[in-house]
View (tube, rainbow, N blue to C red):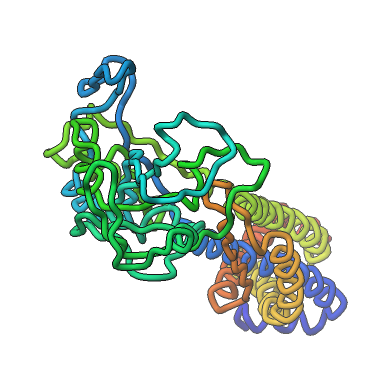
Length: 439
């Protein structure tokens, strides 16, 4: 009679022990299967969040000790400080083509006077010469600028600024209405440079009454133009390119690789630039999910160890009542390895049924846990830098074939280890010693 048949006859004969063993294995399976499903869902949610939120780093001038390209000039009783190595449109274009880069927010800015425009007033007094000035933001692509990507402002008429533009500008709808302007009109600056209005934006909200702001810092007075326009308006070495660029990447985990690729660009002396990473938003958003993942991993280890200990103790107590059976099997020439195999098969036959049936209560458990976690962290508010960006974590917990396979792998491991431990006290004895105990 082979070990499989002997095992089957034993569990059908010892119905009480078999039922107790089934209950223990069933509970173990429910806990393990639920933990596996939650762990997988947490990992998938982190992946989805990482791809949704992305990461970013900023390339700017290096103003540390002895910067190689820093230049300081005296202008109208004051001083201006700028870098002679600036971020060129060619560099922005080259970086934007690197795999994993979503977009590049390259910017620079200046103040320009418009005597013919009636601006919205701020609540901070300013000198006469600045009362008719507006802040003009020079961009590479306006649609990739943070004001637009964060929905702080939205384009409502016309088109965006592109790298090919020259002498083009976007301004607020409110300012256009106030001055009876529309897309296609020409703005005349006090420096004699004409700007064509190619688009109008509507801000999400304006500054509050109590917020201290100058007229040229009001969002309604903001103008967005191409780099060529700012170079012409400034007409000085201070603006011959962009002074800052924020690079957004699709996956924060690939950030270091992208930065290394950027630093390999030979047309730039990177000693003149600093690169500052900003993963704060991703770290904040994933912290709760990471805690769930860490907890589940620890829980799985505890369940595995506890299951081995409990099963080993129970099977050890039962094995002492089977000394007579073991002695008889040895006396008729059945090897110890075959006897241990029988014990393992006995538990596995019960375990297979318990593991399959555990699927149904585990579905209920993960559904309840999933609902709780989803309600606790369904929407994550990121830092104010993202202007209220909301990210859906989409914590979808399901039990699939992969989790069932893992359950069987872990379950078989628990059974084999437990049976092996419980059999040591008997199997280490010699046949003569076992027969002596029988008598």
